[in-house]
Image (tube, rainbow, N blue to C red; front, side, top):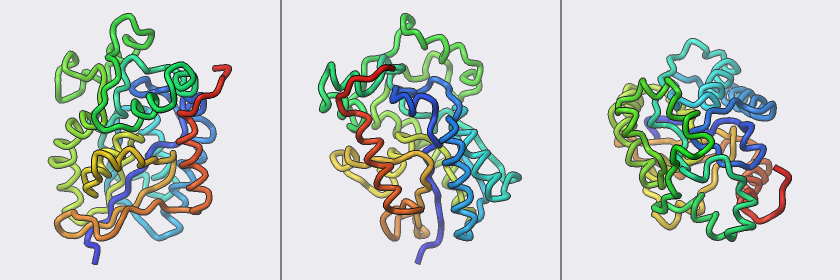
Length: 259
């Protein structure tokens, strides 16, 4: 029997999700569709009888905004929300801002798939010549981190995401879960994938095939040792969920775009 319930949530669609660009640490708000996704997520959780006790987000607006909208839809606006850079999206380095489909056209779909989904491949690092470098590293939110600004990543593999996420998971989130509190982590595609890999023991090879759509709550039921009692479950209309997964997977396919 499950002792604890944990929800993971990839934020609702952002402006650059819509444009099929690597957003990463560039701060973006939700698109109109992303707002709807977050509201529908909160409505679904409320309809199914769930209540939240604690919420964790990254430092990025699309993650925070999603948490606001979910808790508002549930009538749980009062629930504490804690934020950490350790839940940020994977840092895609020099790929930030680039269109995935155009990259696939120029470099091949398999190369882009490895950049997006592999466990231990790191993209080229961002440098000061990158058009979004100073947008990220001059942002005062990163002066609040538990590491100096110069030690923040310039590029990451999924393995590195998990490495920087685990201290926060073990020291901050796990104690809340063990107080028998229902926790929502409103984060990003790769920070959620990294946590799923850790919790469920997904292999380095198999994590490549794990795709998470925006705005779909993921339920994890855990025993007293925080081991899953069954595979994670994406909640909602399963046909719509599979269509959303295919949409995300198609982002890395080669096709000419106007963006």
